[in-house]
Length: 152
Image 1 (cartoon, helix red, strand yellow):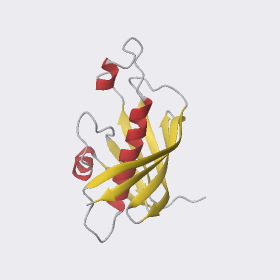
Image 2 (image 1 turned 120 degrees about the vertical axis):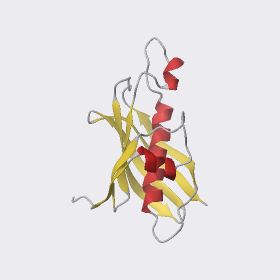
Image 3 (image 1 turned 180 degrees about the vertical axis):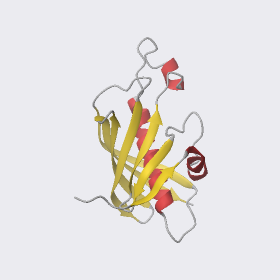
Image 4 (image 1 turned 135 degrees about the horizontal axis):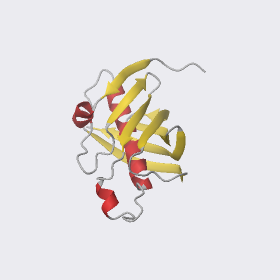
C-alpha cells in the first residue's frame, strides 16, 4: 500500500509549544515528523536519565512509565489533529477521552528514543481516534488506541 504524501516534514519543539498547552514536566514529545495527508505521523521522545519520573519509578532500575508513553501518544495525535485542521481557527485545547486496546510489550530505558507511530482510525466533528505503536529501534514497546477532542 502506498503511503500518503507528507504534509508537514517537521513540527519542532517551538511549534509544539505553540500548538499544545502542555509544559514541563508534562510535555512528553520533542518533535513530530512526517505528518501525512492521511492524518498519520511520528512523535519523537528522547528518554534521558534526567526525566522526573525516574526519581521515583524504580530508581535502582529506571524504567520509563508506560502511562507516560500513552500520554505521549495522545500528545502526538493532538499535534497531528491540530496542524491538520484547515479553514478554521486552531483549537486551543485537546482533551484526552479514551484509551483502548492498550498493551505494553518491552521496557523503555534511559538513552532510548521512542517513536510514536500514530495513524487516524476515525473522526467525528471535533473528536479524533488514533492507533499508536510506540517503537524503540524498530521494535514495538507499547500500543494503544487513543481518542481526543479538540476544543476552542
